[in-house]
Structures are given as C-alpha cells and as structure tokens.
Image 1 (cartoon, rainbow, N blue to C red):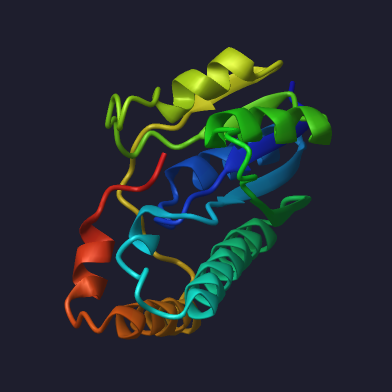
Image 2: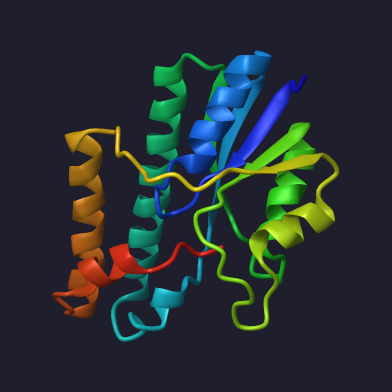
Length: 188
C-alpha cells in the first residue's frame, strides 16, 4: 500500500502516467504529487536564438504553468488528495531522471509513476528517462502503459495551449511550428 505517489508529467500533456497515478492514489488512499520538470534550455530554444530571450523564457514559464494547472485540474476532478507543481531543471548537469528521483525522495514518495508514451531509446548519448529514474530512485517505479490521450481539460485548456503555441510560433516567424510541435516526441 502506497502513501505518497509522485507522477512525472511532461509537456506533451499525455495522460497515461497521470491517469495511472490517480487510479493508484485512489485505490491506496494515497497523496499524489504531479511533478513537471521545466527545462530552461529546451531543444527548440536553439531555433528561437534570434528572438528575444525574455520572450522565450516567458513561453517556457507559461507552458509550465499550463501543464501544472492541467494536472491539478485532473487531480482535483478525480477527488484525490494531491498537488501539482513545477520545478526548474538546474543548469548544473542534473538530468531530468535524477531530478525526478531527488524530488520523490524529498517529497517522501514511495512510488514514482512515469509515462510509457514513447520508447525513444538512446537520445544524443543519454539514457532513457525511466532507466535513469530507476537507477536513482529509492522507491518503487511504475511505468504506465501507453494509452491514447483523451483531452479532458476542455476548451479553456485547449485555448490556453493554443495561445502559448502561437506566441512560440510568432517568436520564430514560423507558421507551421504548431503542427510540428504537436507531432514531436515528448522530451524524456
């Protein structure tokens, strides 16, 4: 029986990990923490290098807030005791996987839930997120089975995400970025 579950939620807004964590938290009457790691230097920042860096940071912050609000709404609507929060990834070389394991330990979580949306294997010489989390975690790790995301947040969230993506696309002057961004694999 788990008492505190930490679920890593990503920028793709896929729901398999969050839905699995909510179900486990409900079954165990456990507290749930949805954690979003904010990458302050995402892959797309290179493409926006010519734009205003403050605009890029604003888009990153807005997107992090949107992901966190989305997770909080799902937790609340499920009637589970929990919170959603974002943590900025430090620039000192700590990987996302290590940071998830550290935050789980700090929160006193006895289960970490990760999404199983994509198995990208090795990316630029980096280990898969789940391998790094499992290596550093001091608790159980559950990989949620991939399930098609059914976007339950409603029109308000869709509008908010569209606005953020439009700002991002506008900062680069690339009209087709929104479609490319939605098709890209989630950063692990």
